[in-house]
Image 1: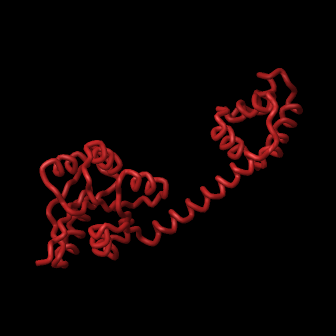
Image 2: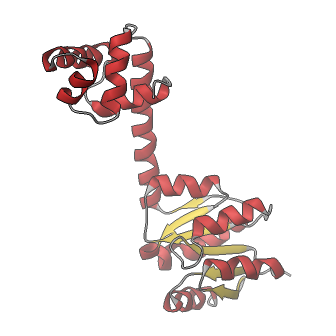
Image 3: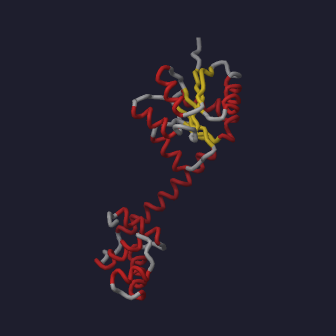
Length: 219
């Protein structure tokens, strides 16, 4: 006999739970075993029960999806989880994957992908809808570019003590005149130091300076 895949759904919208459970009930191998409307209800349910797959919304009252996964991790609860959310921020996806999430689907795509996702995650695979994959890929590319910029800056000319002082104040979002006043220098001299920093560190803007400063423990 083929074992059923037991699924618990956690979302603060009952209508969405009803819709997903209706889809699940069309599959012989998948069984809807319960639902939660708040994050605290999820944690409480899993204290006494188990499901093969948890479908979990990010934005929930009392305790959000990230909080639920953190609680599971702290209690060493091994739970296969698919995140269901209207948010597709790749940084959030990364954070939730790091906390143990096995899949991520946008709510607008749930009806198309949820059954496939449940089966894949139950098999031990990871599952991301196409939009999520695209967002993660873009994030990877941008982070790679940032790493290259940092490596490039690491091979740049060393900074003088005065340039380091100016860099620290720039990262504090002080204006040229404010930096000059603090260091007892003219605005023209500060602008010269700023141009030298851009040239030496091979960056184009304040964000590049800030990344260098953080990575090199200057601030």
